[in-house]
Every structure is written in C-alpha cells, then in structure tokens.
Figure 1 (cartoon, rainbow, N blue to C red):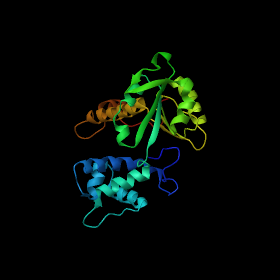
Figure 2 (figure 1 turned 180 degrees about the vertical axis):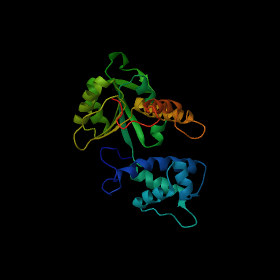
Figure 3 (figure 1 turned 180 degrees about the horizontal axis):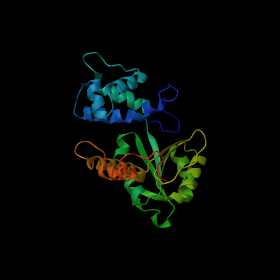
Figure 4 (figure 1 turned 120 degrees about the vertical axis):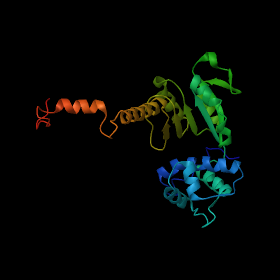
Length: 254
C-alpha cells in the first residue's frame, strides 16, 4: 500500500472549495453508517439530514466530485464511500506521528478510529525520558531526540502535536524541517508555519466557550417576559435609562 509521502490528495488541483472539503468527512461518516447497515442507495435529502447540511448544498458539493445520483433512485452508497474516500486520500496508508504523550496524546494513541479511516499511528514521541520505551496502545514511546529519524524512517507527512503550548512551536519547526507537511495541533497556541504546510487546530476550550455563549443566550431567552418581551435584566436597564416622563433621553449618560 502506498504511503502518504508519495501521494497527495487531489482536492486542490481539482478546484474543490475548502468548505466542500470540510464537509466531505461528514458525508463519509453518514455513508459509512449506511453501508454498515447494508443500505444500497440514499436520497440527497436523507443523506443531507444525516450529515447535518441542506440537500441543495450536498448536491452542489457532490457535483465537484462528478457525482449526480440517479433521479428517483438517489446515490449508490458504496460508490460514494469509495469516491469520497479516494478524494480525501483515504484509499492509501497515511503514517502519523503523535508528539506529546500526556493524557491527551495517550488518548489519541488509543483511539480506534484511525486505522479504519486510512491512518496508521507510526510512532509516539515524547520529551520525557521516563516515558521512553513504555508502551501506549501497544506502541513504544520514543524520545524527541530521534524525531527526525523517526519521520524519515516511516515516511511521515502528517504530525499530531499534543504537547504543552510552550513546546508546540519548537516541535512544529522540527516536524516541518523533517518533511512533515500537514499538522493537527491540539496545543492551545497558534503555530507559525511556512507556505505549503497545512495546520488544523483543535482547541477544546474554544469549543466549550462557544457552547457557553449559546447556553447564556438560551438562558437569556428563557428569562424574557411571557409576552415575548426583552429579558427582565434588559428591561430594568432600559427603564433606568429613561427620563422622568418615560422617554429615552436624547443624549445617553456617559
């Protein structure tokens, strides 16, 4: 099976928009679930609902792949699984290294979904000498001193950074210098990379903060008056801002 160092996905060369590329894994996940249930075909409406997008957007996305389905029948599930997997580069073997084998790195190493999606954890790397040689998910941890040799020996082009923020940029620089061209960054920091290197950042704290915003917003809506008015706290603020006759002053107080 080919390795990631010699084959790159064709999405950019074929002019597929980045937004479409970002949705392809969602379609693939939904299609894989259908395939596991031996569902032969699926309509655009059913697949769009399963992927969480609207059907018009799905049909537009699939048009970039040259797949238009059959009127009255829908899309062939197995063929779409193959087509999207090929477009994403998942029909070949992608060796991955994980750098930083703390709690998060160890959890990633133990994640069973990599192998079934075309990724092979080729090496686990950490700076702590106490971890060197210890097996995590059946893979011995290797020291960062050997990072460049590990990458070359395994033909790695994808690196996962799960280190503390302070070490992430240095690790990133070494990965790039050794030939890694795609990085998945779990460290809570922004990485600087040269042109030609792709970085995807996963920040759990940011995602939680976004959820907190929506929770606060929902709480405010629930606190609104029964007749659909503004929340009580806002009403009190507006009342305090009104003049003696109940009108809002022309010039608001500083």
